[in-house]
Amino acid sequence: MSTEDGAPRIVEAGDRYGLGVVYDRSGSLLLHPHEEVLRSVENWDMDVMSPWRRFLPKTVFPGFHGRASSKLYVTSTRIVLVREIDEWRELAGELTPLGLPNAAAKEKLLATLRRAGVRQYCQVLPHALVIVSCKRYVKHGSSLDLKLMGDDNQQYAIMFWKTDGRDDVTLDFLSSRFRQKGAVSRAPP
Image (tube, rainbow, N blue to C red; front, top):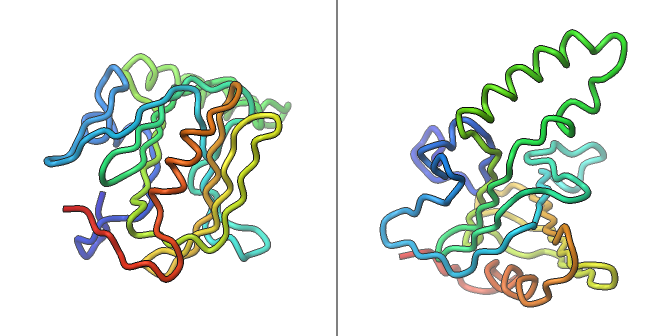
């Protein structure tokens, strides 16, 4: 998880390249040295876009609306979501008469990846992000909508939500992991 100059990326998402680096074949998180899991919860999802002030921001990690088979890990240095690949949701946008050949090829690739134990992942380094705005929704479920500014001068919009029910304790814990405006950086050991 590093850029060309060796500095760690603040937000990283992917699938097959995370196998053996971010997660193992069973989908469990692989920890870095001196890192510990502070909280682990199931059935959460997240959506990451950058920048958030643009009319059409780039989606870094798309969230699924509805139930998702996923696990959210909050460690001493990062927040990681590991999610099963859902072929139907990945192919839904391509199921048109003109998109069927592409959808068939993509379906075959996704099935091969699933058999190999590949999952989708997104990891965030919260110590490198400052909260610009925070909206919390708990009426019909639990969700947290954050607008953040990174140490790399990039804007990030991250939304976390519980796919089934409420979990206010995890919402509080997630928002506490990010730096507040004007706070001193708490870089990991």
